Image 1 (cartoon, rainbow, N blue to C red):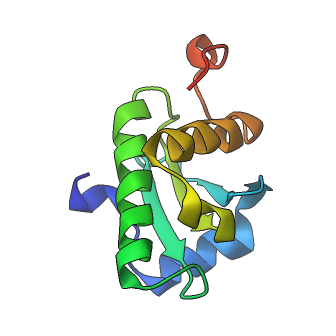
Image 2: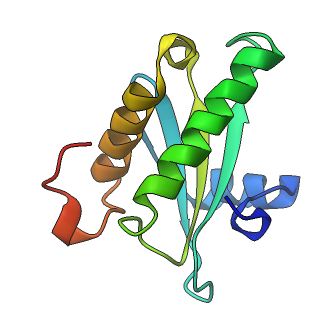
Length: 120
């Protein structure tokens, strides 16, 4: 995932938390903040130390980034997405992470209509 597609600054995270809409399932919380002036979407990841050691946290972040890479044509542009991983993610493999992310994005209604019927 290209660097310019990532949210890095604390200010951007805080703006998503304060002004964005949140949707959650058991594994993820996703904050969505509309940015119509952006021609692409950006994602920010938050994986707490409570979830596991650095190896586990980095693996989770890799899985989330890869999932977004695979479904990027389905995700609406012009939004910032902040994804917070919850404890159950530590025991999931790549396929489960992608499936769960698709579910929470579908609930948030940020997937393009043509693909919402497909199952991850």
